[in-house]
Length: 123
Image 1 (cartoon, rainbow, N blue to C red):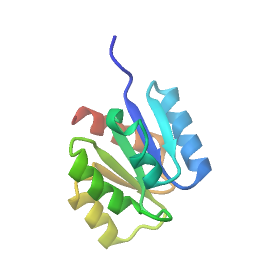
Image 2 (cartoon, helix red, strand yellow):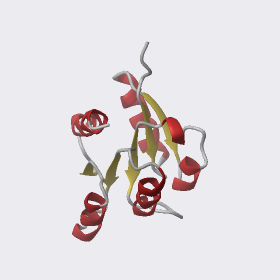
Image 3 (tube, helix red, strand yellow):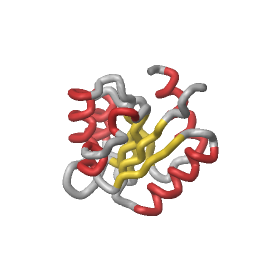
Image 4 (cartoon, rainbow, N blue to C red):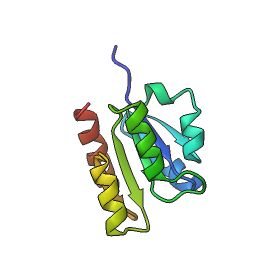
């Protein structure tokens, strides 16, 4: 039996984490939420995570810094960014750093699921 893909949602907003976890679980993915980049990096879920959904702006370590750390330690792990504060330089840094997608809140569930499926297909 194959393991269900694990999607990590890293966002400081509780409601975003919970709604995305519910969405992923409703389509057959395992999902875990983390309130900060540090919490994700320190978790036992990190080594088995198949895709990470990151908020760009978070207290402490932001999404771009977490992406840099993941590229250094887990280069095979796909990253998808989401943000309510879009700006071209940040988007450029995220995508040039290897992000699979960069979604602007509010985005549709289907856009996010398409991005995750594309990310998992590229693994």
